[in-house]
Image 1 (cartoon, helix red, strand yellow):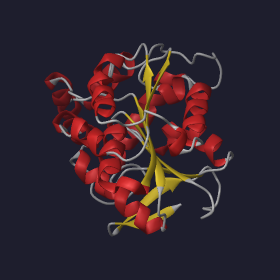
Image 2: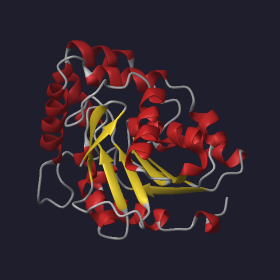
Image 3: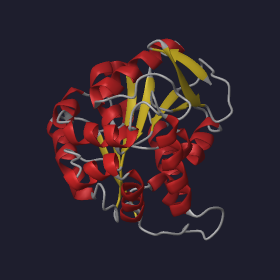
Length: 276
């Protein structure tokens, strides 16, 4: 589905379901050098279990036009504009890695328009090494190999069937990089992650429950790196759930069934029943 958002076409995968205003809506936001396809399993599951799903390509990425966001705050503005474009009064936000920062910032700004916030593979601050930032600009193929080795708990599909996760991620990264010839979205995304400092303040501003879905073997955003956010949310009296998976940074492909189940359970819960 293509929506006109901030004057440009923005693509959202819906799980092959038409938007139904009577259903709750979940917006899924990908990380650096990714697109909607990282959510295929979870998007289809949620779409077939009672949700409108909008798994977006961020502006300037893959099938979406427009200027690639240079900051978390800029990307969060796109999420707010998407809600207006769809005519959706309230939605749950789900983000992975960079997308988790975007979801968090958007939820802090949108207040009651966000019903649930799910942060997958998150950290605050989400610092990126200077060497990796430089490589993403000068040697993107080398940087892509680095993150695909470093960010996974295994270099083969856990099930042994269906796809080779390392090769699939390399192909996806190359495709997304090629999709924007004006801007290196790899480098721009890493810089945006590295510079974002609004995490604790965003946690304090939330009005919805939060799920942290973390990989025990995640070396990109290890579980301990999420502790400041968890502490900030709890200190502000927010409803917080923390769920660990025995995988690395790509929870959606390394543990697709478990990730979908955790999201469905959380998003299907009434915010009023989720206690801090």
